[in-house]
Length: 122
Image (cartoon, rainbow, N blue to C red; front, side):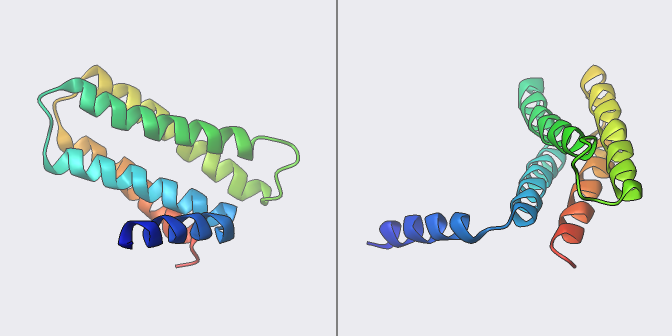
């Protein structure tokens, strides 16, 4: 019975979730995955690649969205998000080329958490 209630809650939560809340949740999911990797640095680079690929796809979507002409965000906010996205894509590439330093994930984790907090109005 408990499992059924959880499924019903998730279905309802998704129905009332705003796009901003969804974006914040995805950013937090990505940050949590990268934090876990940072805390338990993997021997298998594929694990790292998977988490970084998820984050890269997420940021590619954000960048595509903010560069569309019909995006309602102010131009400065759109430019800031695009610049962050470029930084994240570049950092991701560098980490994958030389995956030896777990602390290199810190800026990616922090940016995701801060943007998620901003989307949630914190």
